[in-house]
Length: 217
Length: 217
DNA sequence: TGTACATCAGTGAACGCGCGTTCACTGATGTAC
DNA sequence: TGTACATCAGTGAACGCGCGTTCACTGATGTAC
Image (tube, rainbow over all chains, first blue to last red):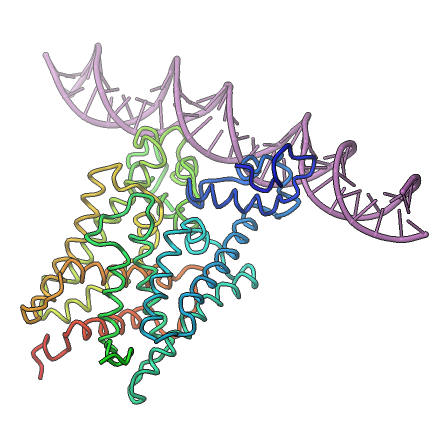
């Protein structure tokens, strides 16, 4: 519990890394009590600093949460891009990893996920935030693009629509069943399997089956 | 703005309908500022009553929100059951109505929807609340049951899984794009169409197409 | 290398405010006889 | 029909508390010369 303090020993007059520490505090507190469950003063206390100190780094609590959301989207985009890996070795396998990675992020980083999608941060407020969040969707969209390209050219569904479908499905599962934490409905199977089955059925509905994609048989 | 006051004229010493008025207040305030954006005192003020008065009806703010969620689930169940109408005149048509009705509820009653799914009300806290929420799912599950019954008996997917898929999809669309209010991503098509397309593709993936279901051709 | 100075990042005390909650109370309503 | 009484549902004043925010301040760090 010595975030932001370099090495051991006492912290001097200056914290040295307060901005980072406040972000960590926000994540910790969101994880503990939900996105609405903490205050600016809480974050300061958590970072071991006077209640006035955070004002040197953020205009107010909303600015802090918006920053957390922004960092969340960055990590999210990185995770998705890595899982997708430009569709290697084949589109279906990569697509499967993409979905799992989405769920995995929601489970591994519930606090980020909360800040990004449930904290009521207005995306419009900060153009940089909007752009960052957009980049995550770009990965999904690119994947959908490659996916529909496997289909015969006539009657191909729009890739944007496919991307939105997959996103909605995954977000739905993540927010209904995805977080380990609390008060959610019991499931007869793990969320990953639920998602995988749904995506498989959906893709079959599009006219894609395993054979078309992987080249095996 | 005279909720709970019978007819015109001044309200006497007794409000007469305070419990209902508090529920309305909560809905109004949730719609305005989100589920975390109001206080017990706010609700009292909205109802035109002293800050101590709500304690006659609810232990605390959480109890009020839980009651709002419960009423929400009741209205939700009623709406879904009505739309489903036991699968009449045919399962596919009824199923289509069911999905639309879900989205319609989220759009028409964003405050209820918020209280039900986003306010962080622990379902376990109140067994009655849990049971009420369960009843909504029962409708969905019954619909999925009739749906899979259209498929050849061998290789039928579990109805529970299908119900969860549809629920996740719909909830995902509702919470990402469904509410008219704020800060959500722009869509190239209305959410209803997005959902309808997704469900159609999904059902095709299950092996259901329009012909199988409606009997037309 | 040393010194003077500007800037930065934190302190801590203070303030006004609204919230949650309690309390003794009181006006209104219902009921027994 | 009238009266006495119990119960109910609200009042309003009071309290302690923590939050958000400002302020003059000060210790630490960086830089010019």
